[in-house]
Image (cartoon, rainbow, N blue to C red; front, top):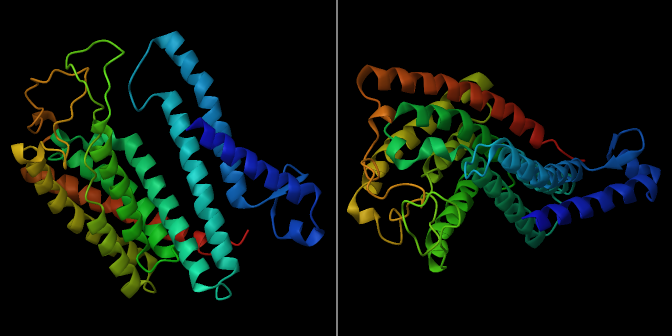
Length: 335
């Protein structure tokens, strides 16, 4: 992981130094100036700052553990810095591909165009995986009958899927992004248990002998497909109307499917290798009452559910409107 940060930072840094000090004035004009003396592409700048963030997170994490003790939480400050750095590097990769695509539009071979499309799709999918990992505590299976999970989903996922659908060189950019996310998350569910492991950090309430996979992925491919369809047919309408439509189709495609899929994940049929519901943290009791049931503190029904979903729709509208502006900017990147 940190090696990846070093590679991204070093090669992007070399590119910036080459452009700044060993390139023609024309090449400098085609890049972005910063700090008065440097010139580089936007993608390279994102990769450099992402690498700095990732490498800074390591000593920050050591200091945090020495000061506050060991932790295995996702949402700790050092882990957030690490996650943001990883996302910046992947976003830098997306921006770099878009810049090449936008500059060479219509002048590249079909093979090169396909390579650029897949590089963009993979980078976008990795960003979705990283963002999901940071907010995944909202999407534990026993919380998926609570409206909070769907309000968070309405804010976060359109903000990521909509701009990719808008700016992607793929016609089905959002769908491919979601498929990359689901494929990577599902692969971890299937592959990690193949390797032996045992707990090294107390307390241990659940003795394990294999790596425990994380959640089976959310069914984001279906709302992503709906977003792509809306984008193809209604792209030119008023952006606020389009944002409202995107929010509506996202919730309509995501909430019912994920709601009932969560019910299935709590059944015995989901405890095999494919869905991975046998997985359980070593620090939690395997006999916990809500291991295979919805927690009452995170369950919504009746008027509370209706109000919550209405609020999710409003939040989704605002998220989608910001995402459309972001996607429009991404579609114009050339440096």
